[in-house]
Length: 111
Image 1: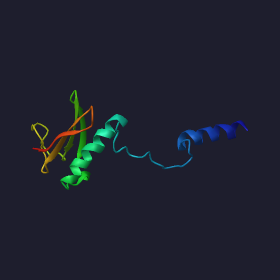
Image 2: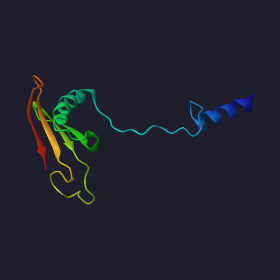
Image 3: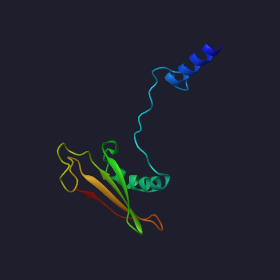
Image 4: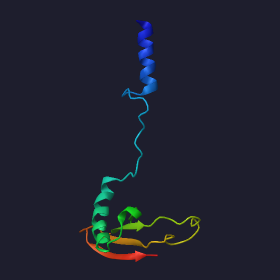
């Protein structure tokens, strides 16, 4: 009985609590706060008007005081770590949204 309990515990520890050997933990694609999601949603509507492929971009949310900036950045080119601006072969896009009424104040490309 004691041997069975030890073997069962060892199996639980080695295989994990779900008992599935070889099951990998899912890869995290992004971690987004709920408060940022509303700003991304508003900015994404402006972004969609430009008919750009959102799958090619990384999204950054910036607190600008009375407004929020949502920046869509293209993938960085190799060796571009020291380059200022948008080091990508596709244009970035920035949307500024007023916090008070969620009105888009400005939307433009970023290079």
